[in-house]
Image (cartoon, helix red, strand yellow):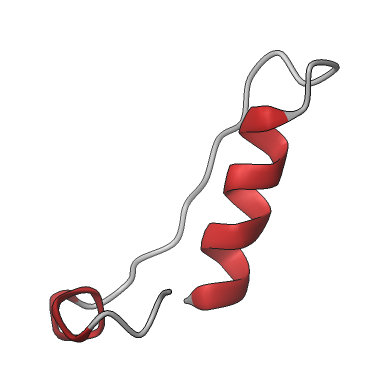
Amino acid sequence: AKQILRLMDALEDNDDVQKAYSNFDIPDEVMERGEYL
């Protein structure tokens, strides 16, 4: 989860990228525990 969220942040921050789509599912338990940080 940590790597995919970091990648999405990097793509969204990149001025050359106009749109970034994703199709991943991170379980709520992982998000609640903060394992994505």
